[in-house]
Each structure stands twice: as structure tokens, then as C-alpha cells.
Length: 413
Image (cartoon, rainbow, N blue to C red):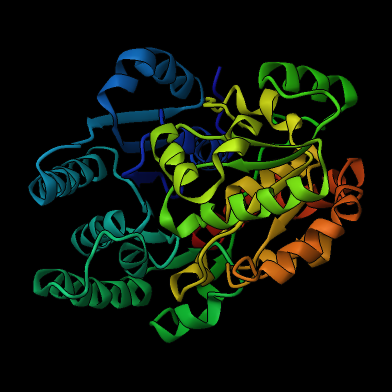
């Protein structure tokens, strides 16, 4: 039975274009809105859900949210019709966001990301609500990084310029702004977020209870599931496949490691199997393909597969937008006690790794540095285990994010 903890001084409307039923929604949205709902005595959530996930999990999710005092309005995510489909979703977001704000007399709109923050600002101007801009990164520039906007095309340049103006307005008008990294704070202030006191850094955290520490038994079971030899040295990759993730350099590191260690294997946990196979075909000798173990896994399955890795490799192409990035996969691997090999130029990653003694930073474009880290691989592996998990929980545990969200709402109350 849901029991509110305090008076509903600011009953929140939480708007997200990501679905609660998505893996990201379950890991990076659901735990937080449950905590906010308890703190604020309930809330209402507007989300956009994929049709196939709605068929599989809508009833169970609705019941789970109801137990937490959360009213849920789910809309279908439009995956077709290109720009027209996105505009249709935006129109529905404006309508339903405004209607829910009026119906529930909300006092604050908590907008996750740039598109939803536009609706949040509209509602703020319409009804006088507070606005929390939960900025998940420099979204406008990320669109360029990931190939969504081609700056050689006039239409895309116009979209970029328009949304950069919107971004400045959102930073300036929001009552509270949340960013993922300390690295981006000065830039967000330059973009209009003033005073700096309304800024809070909340990195992408992990539920350490969902990702238990790897033990010899868990590692053995995971390697059976992934069909990996028990005594192998395993370089791992977790997550989506795309050109910003530098999988070509991951496979180059793996190739160099195989030359040094005959028992070396690779584990890639991803749903993007077709794209991954294409990258392997272009960047890894065919004779080594049999040493790469590909395992699609749901959020509930990932904790059972992760322990098969000895070290996570996370190479992300640096850029202006990447200063705002906080890879969730790092927190999840630290929870399991897995050290990492990463590159610099991505949010607070290098600082966190040095602070936690969680692995090494290399330049993935340099074969010389990759060879050096291969030589030191045993030293990297020794950085993992329970010590890493305990240290990382204080920095990247779910409890850290929940405490900071509570602090933000207390400032508004």
C-alpha cells in the first residue's frame, strides 16, 4: 500500500520520450520516479512506449506504478514517417502534458531531455509551474555526432540553429537543471544556466542490488551461458553498436591481446547483432571470429552474463557533446567488480577511473598504447573485485542519485 511521506507541495508531472518499458527506462527512469513519488506524495508520468513492449508488459508496469502512487499516461511511440512522425509525437506531448498538468494541478514539471523540456517550459508559462530540466546531455550536438543531422544539408543546419536557441532558453528559464557530468557544468553556465546554484550533477548510476558482485561461481555460470572457456581471459563490450562507440578499435585491442595471450576471448553483450557482425567482418581477421561470443540480453539477464567478462572495454569517440556523457555501463560493471579500459574525452570518465582505481585510460587510436595496455592486462584485472564495488557504490550507486533528486525537490518546496 502506497503511503505518502510529506504533503504534496509540488505534485510533479514527469515527461519522458523514452519508454518506461525500455531497458533504459527500467534502469535510468523507473527507480528515480519511484523515489520522487515517495518524496512528493505521488506523481503523474507521461511516457512514449514501443508497441511491442506495451503488448508484453503494460499491465504489469501499470500495477507496479500504481503501488507507488504514480499515475501513468502512456502514448504510443511513432517509429515511422520520419520527421512527420516526430512532429506528431511532439504535438501529442504538448496536448497531453498540458492536460495532465491541468487535471492533476501539478506544481512542477520534471522534463527528461531537450524535447520534453520544451513542453515543460510551455506548461510553466501557461500555468506558472516550476520546471526541472533533466538534461541528459548536449542533445543538439549529439544529433550531429550520431549522424541524425548532416550539417552539409540546409534543412539540418536550420534545425541545429533553431534547437541551439531553444537550448539556451531552456537553460535560462528552468528552475533547476540536472546534468550528468562535472565536466559540462561550465559550458552549461555559458549556455545560459544562471545562477550556477540551480545546477545539480547526477551521473548515470546503477542499482547495485540488481548487479551483484562477481564471484567464482557466478563467473563460471556466466561463461557456460555465453559458451566461453572457463579459464579464458575475456575482454568485454556492453551496449549499443554505432560509429561513436569505436568497435573497430575494440577489435584491434582484442586482436593484439590474442597475440599475447592464447586463451583470450571476447564477449559482446548487445542486441545490435547484425551491425556488430558487419563491423567484425571489416575489422577483425576471420580466424578470430570464433573467439568472439555475442550474447543479446535483457536488463534482467545482463547481471547473469556480465561476470563472464574479466575487463570491460569502453571506447567512445570524443567530441564537444561527449563532455556531457555518463556511460551507464561503467557503473554497472563497477557494481559487478569489473575493471575497465577506456579513453579520455568522455565526461567525467577519466576522473572517476583514477579516483576509484578502476582501470586504465588509453588512446584507442594508438596501436602503441593498445599494445602497452595488453602488456599490463594482468595489472588491470587486479583492480576489480569487491574493493572496486564498494568504492564505486559511494560514487555511482542508485542511492547517490536518489539523494540528489530529493535535494532538488526540497529546493523547490
